[in-house]
Length: 630
Figure 1 (cartoon, rainbow, N blue to C red):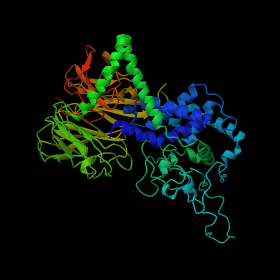
Figure 2: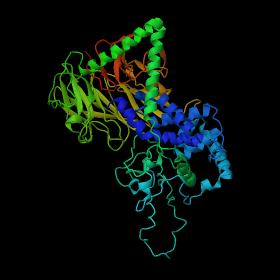
Figure 3: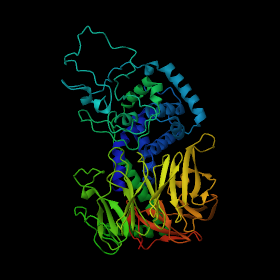
Figure 4: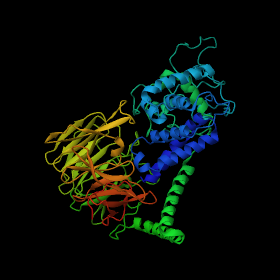
């Protein structure tokens, strides 16, 4: 899927929920819309980076930061949270409406974890004194502006966010004209029942530690816990399945004050359903155009700026033509023409891969149709489809299914249709399995330059590396394991990230270690942001190439963590990933083009700091796996 399409889906599904959070903070619909759009534009300009992690948390962090930094005016008198100072208001909204765990509440509000409980306690006391009715659990009356049900309609037909049995909510009350299930003199329900009231938008509390929806039963509960998961539908709309991607698992915060959480959900429903996709995409595009125009004006003056705009227009047209053909002039297979399945043995190295989609036809990612399978482009220009691999997005988690290509283009790593993770040697047709249990988080492959070793991690407690020559799998265990790079001798650069409370300015730190046949180094701490764009290990196994948070390529001693050499600013349009070392002095970096749709490759000399376009590849996909280079 194209990156822009992925962003459009995220905005369509989640922007109404960000607007509701902003409404609780501001108490004003217009200000809430403006705040949500600004936060989304700022965060989603870096979609290439945040899309693989927790983009919802990133947007919330930007939204809360903007709200707190702008010295917000007092909320309108009628707003239930108007009595609270901005910081206290933000803490309660993040904790009880957005259902963030304490560590993330501290992160988005900028508070120390130790000060969070005190702030929350004071905020609750103030709010309880001013509005004790917000803490009751009895059913509240329907808002006066809520649509009235037509005869025979159920509440779920009137409002899309009403309780739905499909989501695991309590069943809605029977309409008045329906026959009562019991005689009129039947005793009322037990008041001490733990079931939450059937208030608008309320879902049963999430069991502690439940991070992802299960495929059966209460599969919708986790999605309902996070307010941005279920955008409101217009009256009468059918209840669609709610996405589970980018959710933040509730850690029992709603169990502390269930009445308050239900009240906040009802108050947030006062924000009209607003899809912010159009203004956000327009804002992102306007900032890019402004950046291009300023660059042209600064470099060539007013006349030069006009000429630059003409060049940009011509370049855009040329880019469209370029995407229709590959560098050798060979026309790529049109989307409606499916290439042949890859043969059992193939000696033509694979250059890159991408996934297509089946227009107007549903395709199961675990058993994709030919139109939705991975497409492999060889150095010869020939295209094949990988019929043995899962492809696209997992239907339950909406996580992208992975594929990796060795640097010589002769081996592929992917998730097989049977659910296992395998490495496929194309010249011989031999397939070997990586012995690791699947995790419902984002999988990440990396391989050694010679293609002998392939590592797989999920950012979880277990990572693994396959030695293809021997077929043996070695495991790496920790808290949040990432195998950043692998050397030709099987040495692994491993990151293990943990949350901390005792490191000023950091909510978490990552410890890097070298692990291999020669043993394991003691390790050193780094900021996790330094690993955001990946890493590449030099041919001699001594140096790591990384990109800093200010988008400069740096080199670091892999054993000690000491940064040395030049710091090369990667100009133009940002960074997608550190790809590989081309030689002892040169590193290849993938960067987005001016439209943020496709990508180009930049070659950086780590000694001199000079950078230039890599001439061997004039075009590549935004996140297409890269194999053999021309």
